Image (cartoon, rainbow, N blue to C red):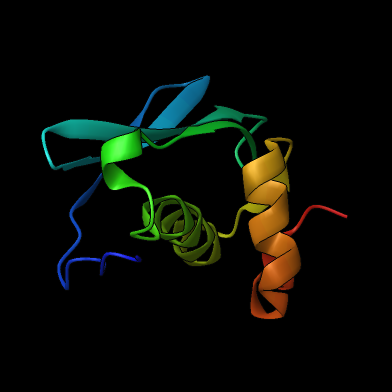
Length: 101
């Protein structure tokens, strides 16, 4: 059974000079997607982790979507090294514009 994603999923972003992460706190657990900064215009998504308590709610997809939205707004490109993020990019042709070629 798939559980719905809350209408207002709160995604936090933390970023330093060399790395960053997106976080979601839900159902007493925390999901995380981490990335490395490669200069001012590129990020490398290296890890996504969604606890079992959040599975089936599209939380991981929401984390990648937020990175795509931020990359578009900030003029960045994304290299999805994480297998989950890479799979999400293959499922969303409209995200291809931010992929590093």
